[in-house]
Amino acid sequence: MAPQAAYAGKRTERLDARVSREEKRVIETAASLRGISVTDLLRTSVKDAAAQIIRENEVLTLAERSRKTFVEALLHPPKPNEKALAAAKRFKQEVG
Image 1 (cartoon, rainbow, N blue to C red):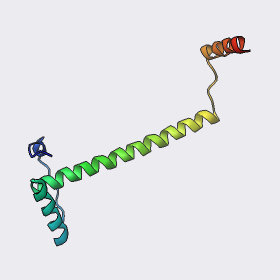
Image 2 (tube, one colour; image 1 turned 45 degrees about the vertical axis):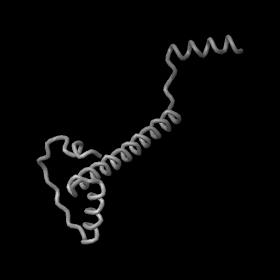
Image 3 (tube, rainbow, N blue to C red; image 1 turned 180 degrees about the horizontal axis):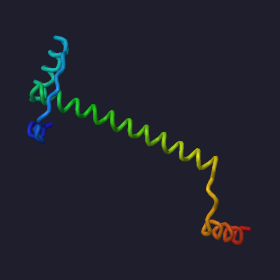
Image 4 (spheres, helix red, strand yellow; image 1 turned 120 degrees about the vertical axis):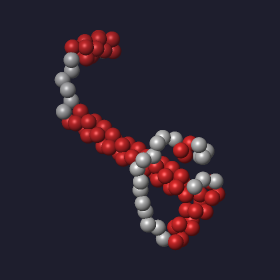
């Protein structure tokens, strides 16, 4: 990620975290290898991870909702409307 992209948007909120000496060393090394500050590494990495968790949850929620809708339609199908009845009639006439 380019350093300029790391500064997009005004930041006014603050998060604090306690880490072990080893965690801090690893984080500092990673930031150095990327050529960005520890703050930018933490901010972008945590934001990316959070976005991924949210996407996974949305997919699971939508999948569950879709499954319930599908099962409900199978167990309690709606009555056919006039267009569906007309289509069925045409099908029977054409196919037999």
